Image 1 (tube, helix red, strand yellow):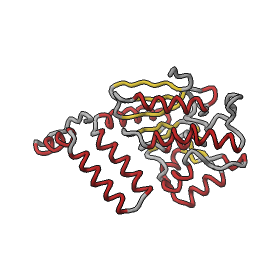
Image 2 (cartoon, one colour):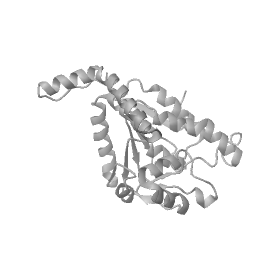
Image 3 (cartoon, helix red, strand yellow):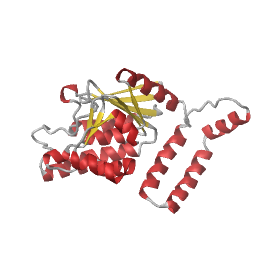
Image 4 (cartoon, one colour):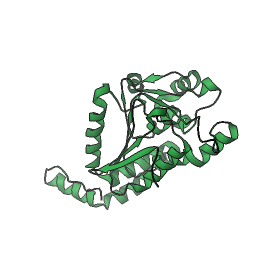
Amino acid sequence: MTYETITLGIENQIATITLNRPDRLNACSLDMADEISDALDRLQDARVLVIRGEGRAFCSGADLQARGDRPVTGGQGSYIALTQKYNPMILKLARLEMPIITAVQGPAAGVGCSIALVGDFVLASKSGYFLQAFVNIGLVPDGGSSWFLPRLIGKARATRMMMLGEKIMGEQAEDWGLIYKCTEDDALAGEVSALAARLAAGPTLSYATMRKNILTSLEHGLSDTLLAEAEGQRIAGSSADAAEGGMAFLQKRKPNFQGK
């Protein structure tokens, strides 16, 4: 697939997907959802994924001016777009077998908010913000926001975001526990690069198993989570990285993980 709405680069085992529609504040069209999903199948040489936006926005939400033959608006049209395009993309991101860092500058609104929050580490600049503006046009949050927000910040704050449609700026988002970290605007790229390099040098299989177990814990009870942890420990414990980690511990040195 040739990408027209995103770019994909892989360097030093760090993959970067850049949402690349700056003239539309990187609004996520159906084509962009398809291209992101396709890009996620091309990360075999990567050990961490960074998602960022080109220009002054992360993502302003779903594209409300989609191609005329594939409208996103309207009840049935929205249902089809969500179930066939946006929701599969979010699930694919959630199930990716490597850590995800999202770098938010400007708006992360609507489905753009969901794309940001699917990250394991969400970093935002002070001018970055998170917005659920659906209420202003008589719609409801989608893209998984109704699942992410109550789990991240609790029912009261999730309800506030969704029903009042307020912007949550980067510093407030960090204070609420919505995101990992808020940075100065000019420090965001450097913070993201440093964290990506750290994760790319870590035990990738272990990270992937942690991601699965966190999802299991959010969707199931204690007994299922305990079983998932045991299975994950069996898999991770048989890896080359676990052997290297054990040896490095005994030899009192820093481990050299290869992501295997």
